[in-house]
Amino acid sequence: MGAERSQACDFDAIVVGSGATGGVAALELCRQGLRTLVLEAGPALRGPGSYGNELTNLGRALGQRLFSRRQFNQEWHAGYWETNPELFVDDTHHPYTTPEDQPYRWIRGRQVGGRSHTWGGVTLRFSDHEFKAGRDGLCPEWPISTADLSPFYDRLEGFFSVHGACDGLAQLPDGNFLEPSGFSPGEDLFKRRVEGRFGRRVIISRGIRARRSADKGERFSRLSSTRTTLAAAQESGNLTLTSDSIVCGIVVDTSTGRANGVEYIHRQTGDLMRARARVVFLCASSIESLRILMMSHSPAHPQGIGAQSGLLGKGLMDHIVSNYYFFMPEVAETNDFELLGSDSIIIPRYQNLSAQSSAFKRGFGLWGGISRMKFPRPLRRRESVALGFLCAMGETLPDDSNAVSLNTSVKDAWGLPVPHIACKWTENDLKLAAAMRSDAEEMIEAAGGEITTLPQVMRTPLVGEFMKTMQKQWELTVPGLFVHEVGGARMGANPRDSVTNPFCQVWEAPNVFVTDGACWVSSGWQNPTLTEMAITARACEHATRLLKAGDL
Image 1: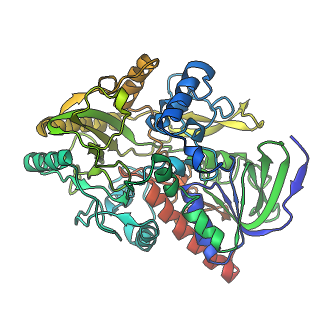
Image 2: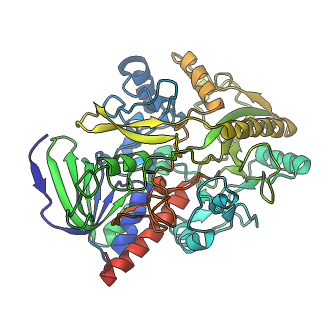
Image 3: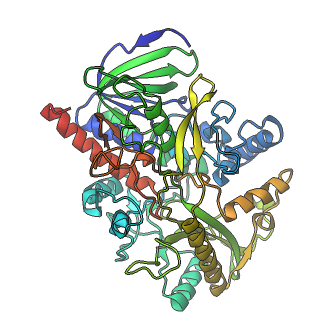
């Protein structure tokens, strides 16, 4: 590691991470006139070519799988095979450890924009069925409600031009939507038959709309923070964005215990740098933010920042997921429908809403689509029949044995201790998963669908056995694989049973804000990104108010 150097100037705020939440933090703080430094651990992308195309991306993925084997965790994620593998980390440089009998797939993207480059653009609000989960004694209580986040949901949906229908469902609140996308013929048939037989709602998704004329790389790039929030923050003149900057700890004032900046390592030179600021926002993704808090040792915080309650790292969650492919023999395939954001279908949660009525606690929803999967034609086995998928997403509740800690015996490529991730499905998770698999199968059958497997859908030259194994892992996902990890620095109403307060401030260092998924109390069943961004925007408004009043 090189000699330590400092930034030439100080900042009002430092944001660690440039993905979905980091971009929102940058935008909100810069718009309020705060001089904001965003630190990204990875490099800046080289332009539109960074997304590649179907053939080059497949070639890169196959080459990695067959020869280099440097992405042995990342390759298990389905999206890895659809986009440029270089948007996922090199696992040999970014190790982590797990208990021998508890595999965990930590899927990561380290570049300016983070994982927002591979975000699917589905934006679902939480309801008070999720925020009030603690009131039935199943988990700690969220200290916020839908009313607290509603104005921030509104603002973000407007900023991202979210499309959707107002369906009047208490378990999936309506929002600030542009006109909804349309159902494909297969989805229309699926909707009529499922709603007619079960009474379960099948609705068009809410999210960012695909552009038919755009290639896949352009579609994904315009969802990324680089094209949206970071670009808008740059226009303010208050943003400094520094790539290749691996944050290794928060620096604190020894007399107050409050943060006064961060230390970071230059990714290529190894130089140790320091930047000063009045507030620090951690938006590095849940597990990485936890690692930074734990690495931030000082006399004021001997176990790391946020460790005072003994809960730091505890309560890690991910959605438990089952994925199905199916054919609709009565429906001809069409290429007229995209898969992105609002261009898909949702079956909102319908279990345990008014009362506990199932053998499992909480519930699940489903996301899917028919005639939206664009496998390369030469690889497709049945071109004429409509192909669908249904992905059941189950809510998990925090268990303190599911936890992140530091493994100081194993170091990454920059000499930093790696996370040790212990996470397994609980008994309730498995009961819920059995029910959601049963319900998904009965809905596909009722709609006239024929369940199939990925190897039966497409030809997989050279990696057939791997794809069969991957399909097996997606039938009941290994934790982490769905990339919806949350928890570990949960918010709460008092410092005895939480790490942060309702505005995401670490109790013992209130100018440190943790606003990515780490601050979550429970997982909900919905895609988390919109709610993570809304929580971030709310925390930024609060931090700005305190700074301007001189209270931070």
